[in-house]
Amino acid sequence: MSRPWPWLGGRPARPILSVMDSEGELLLRLRSGDEQAFVSLVARYHEPMLQLAASFVPSRAVAEEVVQDTWLAVLRGLDGFEGRSSLKTWVFRILVNRARSTGTREQRSVPVADPEPAVDPSRFGADGGWADPPEQWIEAAEVRMEVGKLADRVRGRIGELPARQREVVLLRDVEGMSSEDVCAILALTEANQRVLLHRGRSRLRQLFEDEFREVR
Amino acid sequence: MRVFAFLSRDLACQQAVELVTDYLEGTLSRSARRRFEAHLAGCPHCTEYLAQMRETISLTGRLAPEDLTPQMRDEFVDLYRRWRSEQQ
Image (cartoon, rainbow over all chains, first blue to last red; front, side):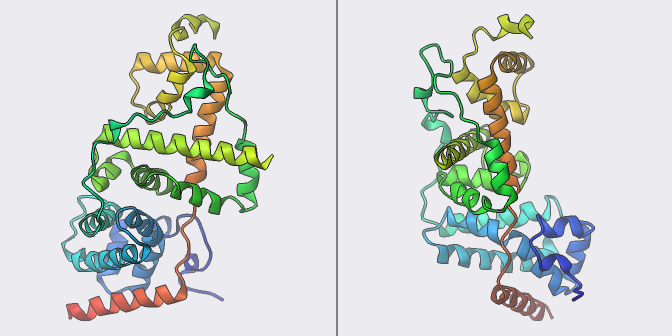
């Protein structure tokens, strides 16, 4: 079956942006009534948007509403979009602003308030050297990734991160956005963004180590 | 790399693991970076740790977004059409 939008069918990594020639072309198509361009844009960002929204609001259902509202706001704002940021950054900013005003979570305090070591201090000796060094797990993870058994676990582990670490990890590492864009979207300073990223990644590493230690 | 051993004398593994993100983000000062790398050169555990942090980033970066269900696809086509008709 030949379809005009072959990437909609399977699950290629990062579908549209590499296929659409440019953001300018995508915008042109969105503005000129190309509904497939819209659907492929939604398909690409919907899930990370849901996950991000979910960390601000009390339930999945509310998160879904926020995302729906965001897409409508995106469409309504298309003509006014001037391209001062990327389309993606703009969409995610709208989302976070909406999720914030909908959500019940309190105003965010400075994340560096509570120190959180990257590695459990009990794994180091008195001299600060490793007493219980990292267990090897990279190869085991790669084998499982290869057979497609790991993706859901990785998703689940990301879901276990504290909300603010999860937000940064989602945007930086899952979505591959720049620290500059992530700071703009989440209204974080560079330094705080880095602290959250460090804690999130460090926790994830530990979760993976635990996971593969169990497997053996 | 034992030449640099003196540089790493005051950097413990417990401190090194806290520098990994700054190192990967390129925000360490030149001297701190050199000290970190000197520590790695003499420490297989921290070298493994750094590799695991890179692997962690790599694993999360390989998640493909879930497909939209056909129903969701239809809903978004509807949303788009409603917006288009609003515009006319």
